[in-house]
Amino acid sequence: MITLVAPGHGHIDALLAFEQDNRAFFEATINARPAGYYSHAAMGLAVAQSMADAIADLGYQYLVVDEAGQIVGRVNLSVVKRAHFHGAVLGYRIAQAACGKGHAGEAVRQVLDIAFGKLRLQRIEADCRVDNEASRRVLLRNGFEQFGHSRRSFEHGGVWYDRLHFECHAPGA
Image (cartoon, rainbow, N blue to C red; front, side, top):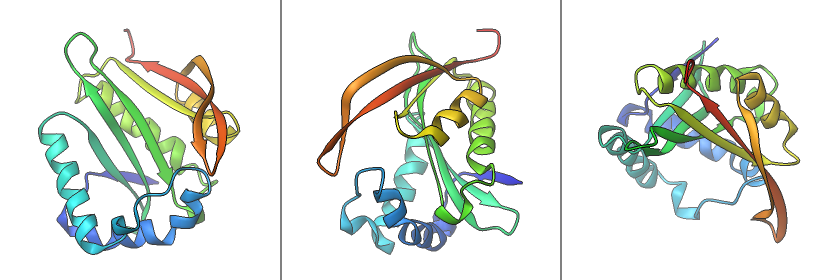
């Protein structure tokens, strides 16, 4: 069982530890964050920015917290567009030690409930690399449908990868 929690100043130390502990794991498949990101000050700024984004209705970040109170992942809704669209882009990452336990699927389910409920969004987009079968399964199991395939659209480590594009609509939309 996991819970989604909006990050606050009280989470800075735990969030920094989560990011540092999983840095190599995440950087194996996504581009590295700047080295300065992995500091207490930078994490504090990131948390403050996430809080400001939520207030401004620009984006919503959540920590994925397990039953023991440990951060095991992050899930976010970014690039919120209201006028004429009422949509956002979904992103998520799960700690290496927490993979394979259903946390990603449950985090996506919960954030979709927030998106289509409290936030009253109508459409959520997501994408993943073609070779990321686990992420593709998480999206499909949560009602996403593939609507596109972009060739050589993501560069990582000097290699270009294809991406799959997905969308999910609010129930009844």
